[in-house]
Length: 143
Image (tube, rainbow, N blue to C red; front, side, top):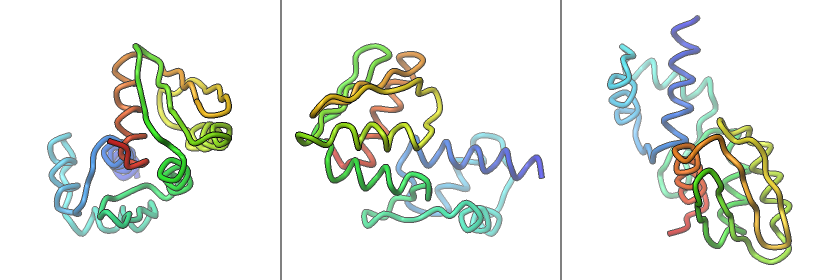
């Protein structure tokens, strides 16, 4: 049980931090992180975790689907300054985008503040801000 939970935590991190398109790529990433697993094991994990594929062919966590919809529909740009991530949105949509970011429970995210068309997300450090910027860009199809 402990191995499965650790492996699924690693899958969650991998899927959120990179664009994984195949089970084989996921197996390779897990093996690079020290997990001995097969494609059949990863296939079971994908089903257990409810991973879905976006139309672009990228795996996304089920809990991130709402976030992905909000980001792809309303986000215009994502900028970063040290440990702060600024999400530029369509006018009037920032509070919904901020709520989706907060609801996703993203690791290292401390909180967000929304205006009319801008969300400020505070994260723990610059490295985490870079990861969040990449995730928002990936899910929102920006840049």
